[in-house]
Image 1: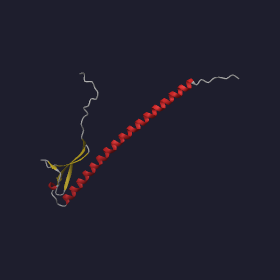
Image 2: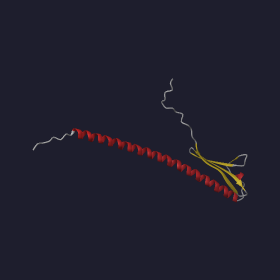
Image 3: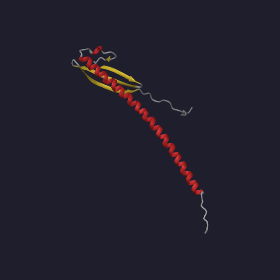
Image 4: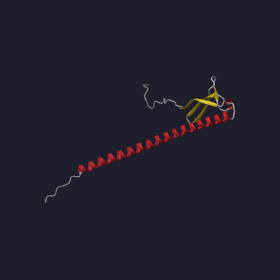
Length: 135
C-alpha cells in the first residue's frame, strides 16, 4: 500500500485566513455594540429630560387652573412673563432644553394654551479639525 502525503500548507493558510476574518468580525461587532449602547444612553437621557419638562409644564397648568378656580388673579402668579398682547409665558429649563408655555386667560376661570415648545440650545460646530486652509 502506497502512503499519500497530506499537504498541510494550503489548509494552514485557509485556517489562518478564516481565523483573521473571524477575529476582525468579532472586533467590529463589539465596537458597533458599544457605539449602539452609547447612542441609546444619549437618547434615553434626552427622552428623560423632555418628559421631566412635560411634567413641569403639566404641573404648572394644574397650579394655574387651581389658582384661578380659587378666584386668584393670574397676574399674581410668580415667575411669568406677560407681553403686550396679553399672552402669559412661563419658561422651564433643564440642561440644554427649554420648555416655553404660552397661555391666554379665557373667561373668568380658565386659560387657553396657545404655545407649547420644547427646544434644545444648539451651536453649530465651527471646528474644522486639521483641515489645511491653504496658508
